[in-house]
Image (tube, rainbow, N blue to C red):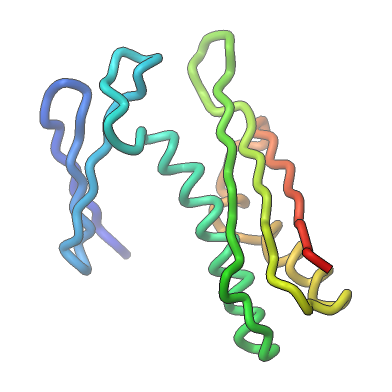
Length: 136
């Protein structure tokens, strides 16, 4: 179990503390939902969790197989529903991969990303298209 404690600080802002490490982060409501947009919104954190989880699971595979993923980037585009209730509609994930990755590993990375725990925890109504871009 990991405990995270969040404190509402007013003005649609919260401060969260990660129990094991003591690290903190602040969330802010987005401008289009009456916030200041000065930090990640809670739904931005969902998008961030998805992309970083996928990258981490891919990294575990890469480490086991001796594949260097240094420099890989993950871009996550979050789109909210336009009709109520307010929720995430789509999280488009684009991986920009380093050169020299063989076909077998490319297929494995696609599978790794699809099996990340965050993706598997999302509501099935949230679309999660993924694209991998290889320079070679």
